[in-house]
Amino acid sequence: MKNVNYIMFTLIFAVIAFSCNTSKAPSKKTANSEQVKDIKVNDTVRIANDDLEYEIIIIDPGYATWLATQARPEGFFSQQYMENRNNIYVIEWNQRVLQPLRFDPDLYELQINYNSRIDYGYEVNYKLYNYFIYFQMRYNQRLGPFVVRI
Image (tube, rainbow, N blue to C red):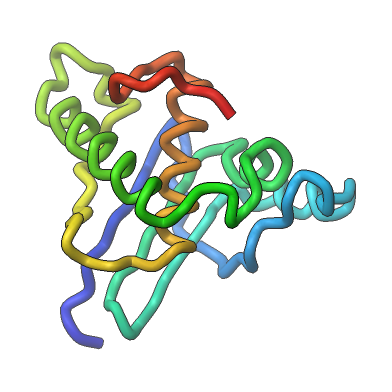
């Protein structure tokens, strides 16, 4: 495979050596208890596209369940809106990674290689944007000037 850009979130106490492909997350209205149970078993969310040569792995207990049950459904926000927010959140995230004495290094472990000039597509921006919302709500952090809400 050609040079692959990796964006990896490794948070909380877990280092998981495996990942699985997930289908598009069901919206709040279509998520049933069986789907939620399956999501809880494996809280790794992986998004990959060989054409664009990128991969995102999000390892955070609870994120996949939150995405399926509480996040706004796909199509609610425009791709441009999410790209703009993601760019702001990534800049702040990367600054916090570089300041481990000021910010908890267990929360901000790795930098995110996100280039605002690359079109990652709707799915990547949707899951990344929602991860930032989830992260800010769960860990009581504020990555930008916006009030976090779902």
